[in-house]
Every structure is written in structure tokens, then in C-alpha cells.
Length: 305
Image (cartoon, rainbow, N blue to C red):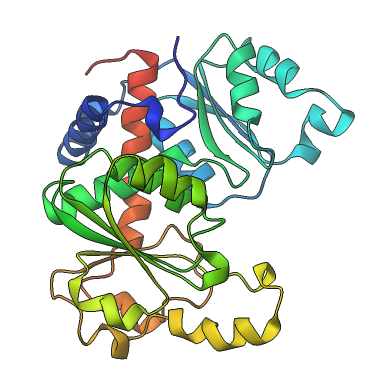
């Protein structure tokens, strides 16, 4: 019995295997339509979610399985004070696998330590979001044909963005990746990511506040929201916020082959005018997330098709 709480819980070989299964599902969904017949996924979401919860549920239904859903702490025994450990033990009596989102960092780890079935971390606080990273990796792989030898720009809130930290960790294991980290000084990538990942592995990276300056060299642009609430100084926010709103004008110097990703939800950091640009991949990411979650469910349940 195995859980996935962090993208580093999966080896590079396992990532390649999941991508291959996801590609096969895309090519022949009917082949997988009864793969999880008789199996039940419990979705325990103690924090709001649209894409992640619904894509887990769609994934299980499309594998022929069933879903037991808790869509908020106030609709579960957590409202009565039940511990995460006891919830995990209880759900293990009803389901075959758990997908869990929780506002507290480490809660899915506690669940995995107490459950007798696999637990998938569907996001814990500002910590980890491994299945979003799986969606990102499949999107990059489908757009570029590989996960090596490219320049990847991360733009916006790089300090608090769990999706950014997870994807840097994942891509750091592939050859020829250059990281371009674009953010206000106040929202730079945390020192521990720089020291424990980029510098420890001697990876090429640059930090800048200027998106336009680095735009021509990017193969991937991973946008995130600049969060007003993270600024101590309103003037700093007002000075910086517009430099990270992606518009058609700002893409004039970008490569024709650029792929634009965003974990969503979007607020205003990507103009809707870009949605029709063939380089926009963020809604493909949403769909790819479903396929990778299907592949991961099969792997953790030990089902081969």
C-alpha cells in the first residue's frame, strides 16, 4: 500500500510510466472505461476546490469506479472535532483510495500514516500539490515532446505558490533545464528552494523582476497570480502588479513555440485575449490533470490494463 504526498515520492521512471499510461488513455479511453469497476474513491476536500476535486471525481467515473465525496469540513465530522487520523481510519472502511485537500500542511501525511488504503495529496496549505505537477508535466511533454533541454520561466508569486515549488522540484531531475524566476523582490522563490534544489544540483537559474527582458528566451512560461494580500506596501503592489499581467502586446517578442501554462484559477494575470492564442495551454492543463489522475489512481490501486 503506497501513498503520494509529494512529487518526489515518484521516481523519474514512474513519472515516465504515468505519462505513458495517460497518453494511452487519451488514445483509447474505452479500453480503460471499466478498469476500476467496483472500486471507490473518497474525495476529502476540507478547502474550496473546483478543478482538483471535479477532475479526481471525473477520473474515477471514467475508469468505471464510484466516488464518495466530502466537499467541506463543515459537512464532515471534522466540524465535531474529529481528528484527521480518525477520519482516515474511518474512510478506510468504506473506500479503496483517498484524495485529500487540507488547509494544514502535513495533514495528508497524517492521513496516510493512519489509513489502510492509499492517500493522494490533493493540496496541503502552501506546501505541496503533486497532482497539479503531474498535469503540468503531461502538458509540457505533450507540447514539447520531452521534459529536457528547455528554458522554463516562472512568473508572479514564486514565494507562496505551492505549484511553483513542486514543478521546480520535478523538473530539476531532467537534463538541460534552465530556470528563469520572474517576480517582485517581495515574492521571490524561497531561499530553501534556491539552496536545496537549484544550487545543490548546480542547475542554471536567473532571478529577475523584468518579464519582457527574458521573454524571447522562454520555451515555457508558467504564470501565477501576484497576490495583493502578500504585500506590506500598497505602493509596491501598484508599481509591480501590471508588469505581470500577460497581454498580446507582451508576447510580441516571444517564441512562436512558447507554451503558456497557469495552474488556475486565473484572476487578471493573463488577459482573456490570449485564450485564443495557440500558445495558451492552461485549459489543456486542466484536461491533462484528469488523465494523469486516472493514471495515478490505476498505479496506486495496482491495476494494469
